[in-house]
Length: 477
Image (cartoon, rainbow, N blue to C red; front, side):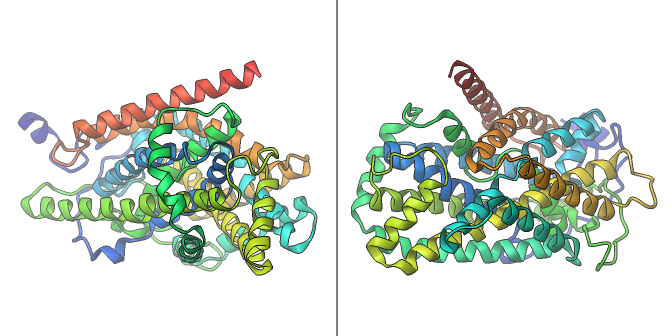
């Protein structure tokens, strides 16, 4: 370890260099109070709170009861470790984790662009939102509502002076809105369903219920939280939030309304001293707390409460329809019949708004990852196509792809979500291994620990096994 520390004296360790420029040394800032760093966990939770809570786990609960909620707890737990390891690299270098992958091999550039764009090109969240919006409106053209929503998302991201600030504020509003409804739902649920939860969850551990389509199970597992490239974007949001060495990185701004900040897509490292290590420990502690509370707990509580709500008002077997948004329409109708028409409207409206905000995060993260990769590799020395301009172009490419898919008539939300989940499962198999490699190359005093290597290794195997199981099941059926 002494020889290695002498050879690689900075926080980047063996990651300094590779296929990209070496990292200059700058000071690691002191960690601010915890409330000042809250943000990236909220943004990533906003994706999961929209698919897992409204669409997937309540439907599964209506089929088999509470026996599949173990998958939400475990799936979120694995993603918590992924998120914090993604953040570790940005804390140490100010680079995104994808830039770290590119230091290993430039060939990851086109592969990760494809692995990010293709799964999320399907406008699943926006289509779900549009269809849900037709419930309180009494009808409407889902395609045109969804296309209009995508254009609105593109406009919001284009005209935000500092994009991350806008995204964070919008998603914070969404989380507060959902949590207020969750608190109200707890009152409606009462105490009885909670007493059934522990036994049912333990009884179901490891079981994949045959009564539920495998695509829905795959979606519930992958999209309980973030899933796929969503987790990698934690480092992009952490950099713009100014976590650790990310304070030295430029933020993505609108080329229309904002003033671009000087800087490069590659990062900086800090010298290992007693002072910097003390600051590092505080940063690492704060980031783990931020991710555990705003991502893990908020998402898990939301999923459990919405599943219990379905368990309370619908029951097991109370809905016999297919795995589509007809379930949400049915659940809202039952709420209206039991507690008043106003609650039906509120339920559908919150769901529709929640899914729009989830799609906004999806477009943002795809544009961020794509522009970051291009700015790091092919456009590194380009004076016109800066990262901000590339980001905006990527936003509108995503809007165009989504509109084109909808124009072709592919507007079945749960089918689109299942396709995205399958593709993202494959992405997660790859990047779990790469995260171990990259964070294992950081200075040994701040790099990934052996227990965390094991957790990410288990995650990679689990996602691979479940993806293969899903593909084989689809082929057989």
